[in-house]
Image (tube, rainbow, N blue to C red; front, side, top):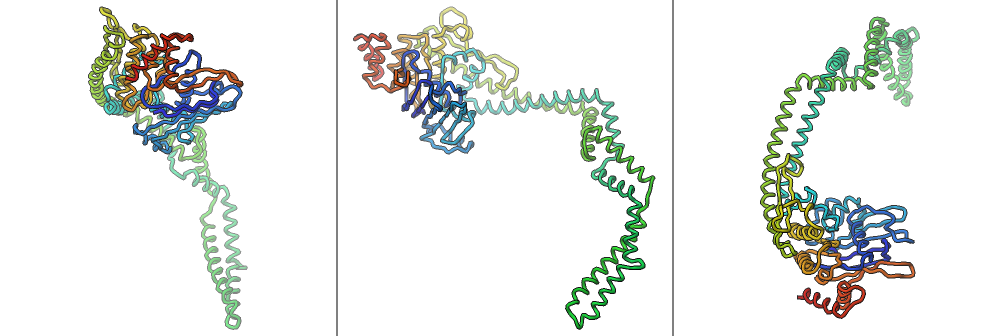
Length: 554
């Protein structure tokens, strides 16, 4: 429920801080006074697009902030899931706009994306403006009304899950067919590529090993010379091994009288052993290294083939070539085994479709039952609204499977005797559509927990007793912890509100401003009388206004 709305530097509003209350409230004011500005401010809080023209002329920033009581609506999970502090008694939504074009949104002082503001806003406020009447011509809206009354969310969710699985299965079948057809056109080329890569006998690490071997073969003479020289220096005529051994012996001879050389002797002995091992290894490798022109040619030929394949397939390693081969193998496997794979996918698709159709049938049954409830309730609500001959029917037609199920809904309407039922959007007048939409909203509000409903001139095209009946419906909607706010030009509806707000313009030193205030009893009498008689308020209008208010007091 909306508790407070604060507006600063928005359009013609300098500063406004208004408290709101439960039940049925009304907002009145002359045309152009700024009622639409109030709605615009609320729209920004609900995540609508912002423009710098909304900022009051001569200022750099506007702020709109609303406080809500959400203690009765079970919204804690939304705040937990989005890592926002939860305050059931005072949920704060704020929107800030700057002249530079920057827009920021906050929920309980936490910066959030506008999409999240919209998500929360849809659960807090339903703004019914005149353009929403166009929804009566849309099948999705009509079907959603039936679903709300059916209370079939669990059934709908189960259908949705199966339907999405079915759609994925359909796409999988289509993909396999397309891939198979394309691969068949390329089959000869794919088999040529497969053989080319298979003949290369590729394995991991192969390129690095061959490149190392090629380097060794290319420099075989240099390697052999270096190894021989190493072996000769270590154990040749002037043997480094012998000299290290002799040096160690010399130190050992004096170690008894000069212990400080004991460690040096030990280290030289270790060096002697290590050098002897190195000399042995070098000597052994001398015999292993030979220039082999045949092997060199073989290695380089294999490497050239690898480099050529890498360039051809636009990769850099043998491992990537192996991945290319795996991909080609998979494509050819689809060609060779495509019929069996396709049959399996089609079998899965058909099974999921059958399951979706079964769940859609359950959904249809719930809608048929709800359709009867809608017809009965709309009859009950519309007859007192000046439609004694009303006929309202929910026509459900079978359709192919869609994300909504297997049904199309159409609201059929006739306000007169002996006239055929026709789609409501095609035959109802503006006033009739307003009454139909009000009745639908009243019915829906009884089925869902929507804290605040705002009607923007829902009374268009009606007057007199019908207006009083509409006021009664809105007043009834305001019961059961709901809040209904109606922007109206009709005195009958204005008088029905528990709380009455007036929007008006005034001239100040800074220019023309729009302001909003809550009216006391005497001010309400004057405002309603003016709505009845115009700017020249008569005694009869005053008396009539008082009578209208007495009806509300009862």
